[in-house]
Length: 342
Image 1: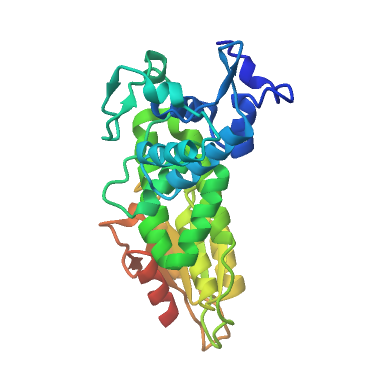
Image 2: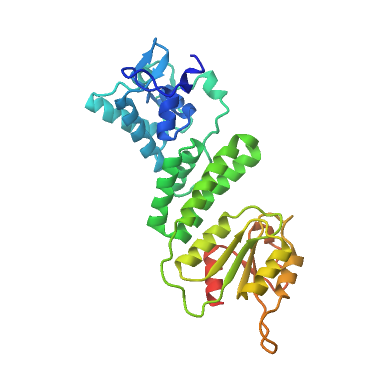
């Protein structure tokens, strides 16, 4: 197969679309489409010159169905059986018939029988494999599959759906965070193979969190909370989830994001007079008890009625080393409850 064929934007009008064009249309990696063709028979009805894949409208409709099913957590082999049953029942698409009928059948890697064994080139592919999310919600598996195949439209739909269904705290704790942790673990062990997966997933999670709107007007007299990552810390998603939840509940907050210098944090405290400052540290290397002490000592207000902020620490970097005088926030729900009392 000519490796440059999938770079063509489009095939002749009567010949269908190339794999590359279909991948761009659906937001799916070309390697995923080839894998579905080889392993499950979700492939094109025709091939140009008998070799190059050309996808017709019926083929693309089958792919859309496959993407929808896997995005909600259905295993690929089961999703493929559903799609093939539908297309064979309608008699409109020949997607994958040769592959499904081929010999040399063995149990697939996801535990389903009847899928052809992947070729040597498929086994040697550098495309990321499935994310191990353990005994998590079904939506976690769907989100993980969409992230691995770089399916941006599916990520957006899934994140919107889980936020609508569970609300922000539960969606974060039970769906988003487990998948982010799974990506992080794979990144640590597989290196650059998962960087693109982590970046795409993080981008869409951040966008979904920013799309959360205020659920109620600001509570009268509620104290302001400043949210910031400690110097040298760039992981912001947990603070973004906290900022979105506070906004949804009508609790005022200022989100400063990643790696805020100590001097800038002190200045922000003096200028805004917050009831609380939340410092996020992902790593023990960035968690700084000295910074906590500096911020806890900042005062504002008129003489005789000076005030200081309550400093809260959050994130795995602070686990087991809570600085004196600071409040440790163990999770999103705990953080919201604590800040609401201030």
